[in-house]
Length: 389
View 1 (cartoon, rainbow, N blue to C red):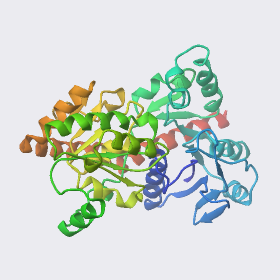
View 2 (tube, rainbow, N blue to C red; view 1 turned 30 degrees about the vertical axis):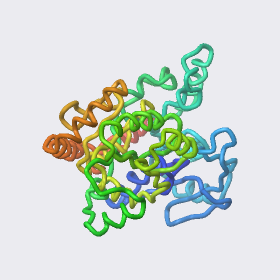
View 3 (tube, helix red, strand yellow; view 1 turned 180 degrees about the vertical axis):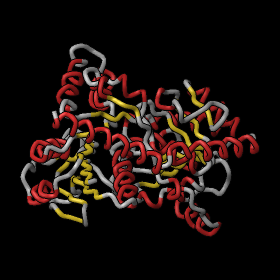
């Protein structure tokens, strides 16, 4: 089987979608499946790295985290067309998604799309449910997914997104997966000491961990406010924020304003293959986001035996079980209560962490890719059946 995967972000980009695409490509190639990835470059040039094709791009003015490209004809595209993929899997609806549809038209390869993001909430925020703005994602979704034979949703929560109103009949839910072995690596005492010394983190079992792109929608501002309350209960608690993004400066200013600089640490961008080190120094993974669809960081933390404390949300179905591998909260007071409960009871913390590690097995990349390949076979078979008639 020849599989073309397209995504505007890939491998070294700081977002979950990019990492999911890397998981797909790596595991399929490990199995001997022919895979080409078409993505966008972070440089002002197009280049190729093995079977990964990077097209020249630029950053969006209004949303700098988004890459844009006007390329529609290129030798790389011609090369992929000549290769004749059996199926095309689109992970982002932007420039590479548009090109993927062009390649499909030429080659006749069926399209599977994964819809990762609630674009209505991301673009319009609080006004996303106000008429006539509600019509924009509905109409956009009708056109964005109309050529897809099947649309994969990472969680049942995504069924509620406006962009899927007219395509629910061809949607299927498949939770994201990760390469568990990449995160379940031991960190030696010396490595731990050096890492904590590098960022000035105190070596204790009271480290709250955030691993995230630093965007407004992640609501890390809430966690900083609650951190102020937690420090009044226990001055030894620390918050380590791993990642970078457009909202970092605002978060740093808020930290200074709250006068909690000595207990909050920003690592900046960390290469994906080094993030496991931070999970291994954390005590509890925390998130205040209600923007997630099926967050990889929750699963990564669980794989590293961390209890998770996250804002109550539909995306947690099948991921978090209250009192088993962590807690979901609705208010800041709930958040603080759960954190203190875990930090003050070592046996509970260890039990929650062990349960989290066992539950992470549900999201192993091999099961994830097995299910995806079954979907590919079904779509290709149905396509051949239609052509035969």
